[in-house]
Amino acid sequence: MFDWLQNFADWLVYSVFNINTNSHFGEALNFFIYDAIKILILLFVVIFLMGIVNSYFPVDKVKSYLTRKKLYGLEYLMASLFGVVTPFCSCSSVPLFIGFVRGGIPLGVTFSFLITSPLVNEVAIGLFIGLFGLKTTIIYVISGILLGTFSGIILQKLNLERFLTPWVKKILANAEKEQHQFINKKQSLKQRLAIIWNDVVKILKGVTPYVIVGIAIGGIMHGYIPEGFFETYMSKDNLFAVPIATIFAVPMYTNASGVLPIVQVLVDKGIPLGTAIAFMMGVVGLSLPEAMLLKKVMTLKLIAIFFGVVTVCIIISGYVFNIIL
Image 1 (tube, helix red, strand yellow):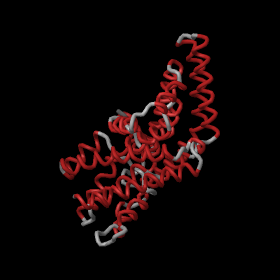
Image 2 (cartoon, helix red, strand yellow; image 1 turned 30 degrees about the vertical axis):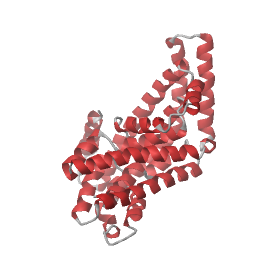
Image 3 (cartoon, one colour; image 1 turned 135 degrees about the horizontal axis):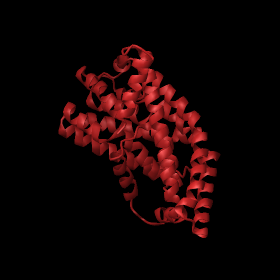
């Protein structure tokens, strides 16, 4: 979908700026240009579309339905499955988070989507089949969906809404006021667009600095951290290899298709598949750039809880993988 953007980033960095294609700086800058533009486009589209949706569908009724109805965890599973078919990277978290929460989706359900979306997508599945076979791929996909589902349930049970930043709470309050205004005045779409557009501009102004800084951190890590840096600590003889692999993965940042070749190298060097996959999940699902982006919408305590719950679930998945594969 963003092939044109990657071509533009390649042209700008390697042709216009004339930077060596094999240089660390070139890789970091290419990554930054590509991801910064992609995330800002995604941010604009998601917030704009959710603004239109929120103007027609009552947010309070959506919230009431999802909190009143006993769906027995089905809403978390559906959010995780939706994440599978929407291949967003972890640094897309801010626009998606705002869009989902503004639409009345509970935090836990939103987290289920955000966890699964970067981990499992059609590109990663295709590569996984080619590298590790159908059986391992099926187990990985199921584990990724279950990881998102159970992490979302746990996070919802903790009642974390109070740890949202004042900025997000203000956006949510304004969204509900605007929605009531749309209904009471029965405005046409054309009349609503002016209010929706102002809302989009406010959100863009608020999060753009965080997006730029977060992606800059990701670009530096992408370009400068060597692939073999962590191999020493992941040997099969180390009982704590899985948690070490998961924790050490956090400073890195890339998408699932980008980290899979690294996983293959680790496995070829004798590192257990479960440990390598835990490393992959940590790289894709958790990252310092993502934490930087989330700082605009979550307090540090909420970020710590979110990362902590997902980290524990990834570690458990890694040990289970090592047992069954």
